[in-house]
Image (cartoon, rainbow, N blue to C red; front, side, top):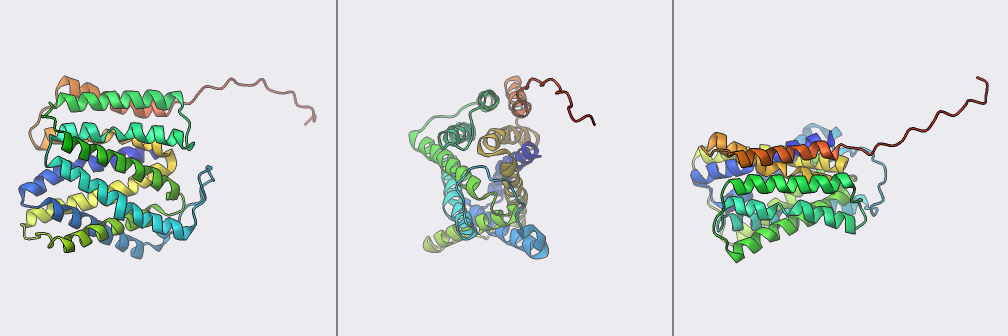
Length: 309
């Protein structure tokens, strides 16, 4: 279930770009989009916890060697993940998106699976197995083909730095989340992250004069899609998948996200998929099978039974 949950999360996150374009067409500003997204998601997740108290309990998980994190510290870390990590990553991403081509932005952002895998190995959390190396290379090549097949835009250093900053921020976010994902239930963790992000963006809105919420009903509908599908469902699936697969595998499987974005853009915005993009999509999907490969261990000969039974 772990890889499947990561793919569901990537698909939901991949739909966010489409919802965002439609929201912008309806007159929603980036500041309003971010604030409403995280606030609505936090409220929805809190309502789920109130209606389903059983979801507050974390499932027991065997100790994997990571540093022990007390529950109080885990709760504070979860809030910090949203208030610092997720809020910063989203702000950097949308700041870059206003200044550069979306395909080039996605290409720079999706350097984070490489960063996560290398960092997890250097921190001693995971081993760089042959399957992970091959899956990482295949997924990166597939993503490159999908994004390059869409055509590139003009390169500018400042937006590129913002995009790479988003990749680095998301790398740190995943690695920190991996230290608490086994201590907190996925719904609790997601609620705290959304609440932290909403708090940071709300404070920023107060300091900068607020955000414009005067847009038509259609804008609210697209924001609801971002909050429910591309935030609540995406976050719950990601944390549940991260818990079962580990940070590097979850990051590699997340490269499915730009493939979904490109496909949905072709279906809803009239963009076409060329053979290069289709080949890239196949490569990204094939990394799922590669990650499931296990080394074949030689079978030991059966030992004779000496107890006479």
